[in-house]
Length: 253
Image 1 (cartoon, one colour):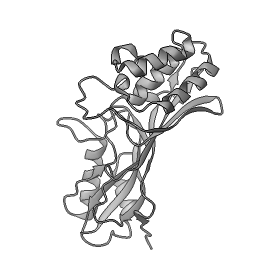
Image 2: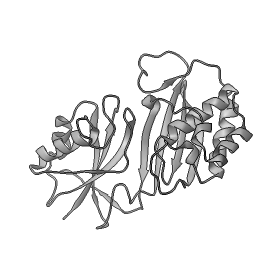
Image 3: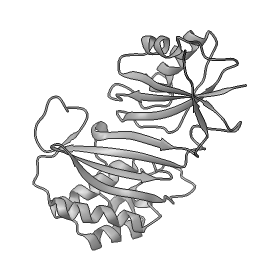
């Protein structure tokens, strides 16, 4: 049976995360319902990740199986049925027969947005920083995450992980206009890991933590020593990377 993949973009504010849960409104639940109506059979999607409540996504790939070709009106029809804060941006056909949106991913990228002024337009999409921060210290500290591979100190407690090993390939800040964005890319992430990392980096900016202290936190593997888990508002899943040639774009004539 053909396996298809859609890139899903959503504003996560009103959703209890991606994954279907009892008595909760979720992104996956809304997507499955829309796909099932358009394709006229029960459709179950499998997402590339399980974003927490309130987290947004610029691109969260999800796969599903469907016998036959997608109809020409597929993109329009699905988006017409989805709530205005969820959309599918692209559709693909998976080439490898065992392709899986989650397990075939080679890397994932997140961004966390910081704003330094009260901005109602960005409310819900960026963490408003009211304090004066030592940004140069934060820039330098962000690079330290590239030197380690175990991140138990930044994982939500009682998450039942088999391993805390993560291969972080990018960890840096950049300005986008007057908004400061933290970018991080790795082969995998632990639950609440990025929000705890940015909370800890903000502590560096406040001067309550220095680089040796950050190293001690990482090496201690003790969650109680790391910074607070920042709000979901500013966090976006921005990309999921797969082996080249795994996906073929569906062209709707």
